[in-house]
Amino acid sequence: MRSPLSPDVTNPPGVVIAEYVWIDGREGLRSKPKTVEKKWKSLDDLKKSPMKYLPKWNYDGSSTDQAPGTDSEVMIYPQAVFKDPFRGGDNILVMCDMYTPGGTPIPTNTRFQCAQVMDKAKHLAPWFGIEQEYFIIRPKDRKPIGFPEDGSEPAPQFAYYCGVGGSNAFGRTICDEHYIACLYAGIQVSGTNGEVAPGQWEFQVGPCVGIDSGDQLWMARYILERVAEAYGYDIDLSPKPVVGDWNGSGAHTNFSTKPMRDSGGIEEIYKAIERLSMKHREHIAVYGKGNDKRLTGKHETASIEAFTWGKANRGASVRVGNQTVADGCGYFEDRRPAGNMDPYLVTMMLTSTCCDIKIEKMPTM
Image 1 (cartoon, rainbow, N blue to C red):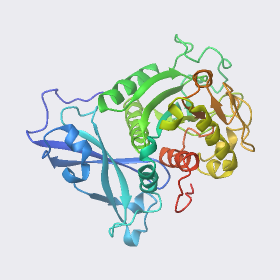
Image 2: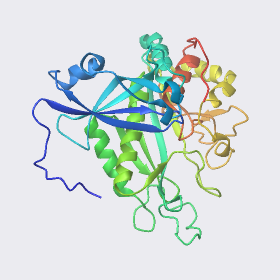
Image 3: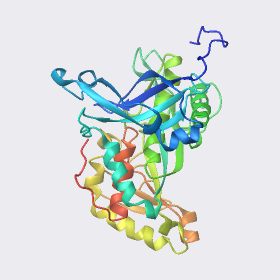
Image 4: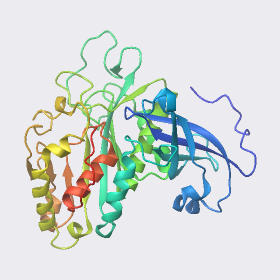
């Protein structure tokens, strides 16, 4: 489905369409566009101070499971700005967070609390790289593309991972268009790959510093939904969308601080892993709904019941890469987060636990 508009149809001079994007009450994404006057000199100026140039806005929270109908107005504040790969030109995508009309963050505004923790940890320069797995889904039968429409099973897992060819790669066009759109938008996508099941793909965002990780991953998800929408497909981030002998979808999160990246930082990594081992349940509680269906100890996962770690072990809760061990510094990978996790919560919890920063109120999903 492509636009019927002529390429000559563009915005009037000085007018920008800003697509405001926010998270709803069920961890889905919503958006609506607003016409704004371009008062900033450069995109960099706008990115540094979104609230200076872009107005606050509102939406009907009773339609997003975030407010009652008797008092339904929820305010959205512009927080992060990206170039719009759909409209092009000076048009922008705006990642927002949510508040009451009185200025109090609503309960589902996980960005607000994450930003507080990241501010306290900024001297440690926390870096994140998130590996987002997902399935491309046919709306008519809720099955991944590549699964036979007659209800039979496709060939077992093997040839699909980084696979090539019409029998192995289903949805490459969506994956590639999403990749290019994210790079155009200014999102730090470092790569993509086909995953182990038909219609399953992955993209990686990072390394990002602090709150940028959550902002960029949420916007990358939004762009992915929009690209798939143009082809009539849905995106499924849930941990185990296909029952049976198929891998689920994770969002493995790579993490480091400056002390971990410096010479001898492996000792800081070991200390962080020890802290994580003592807060396994608190992390699992916010690492994605339905994650128990994925973290079974099979299909390259650890059991949800216990914390484990190992060198180059993809069946552990936390993996330390061979290169990190050899270099004596670097990063580690938390393999527990599910594909549908909230990156604001996951990055906040990793930073809080590993950097010993107190969270005023523990989050819940």
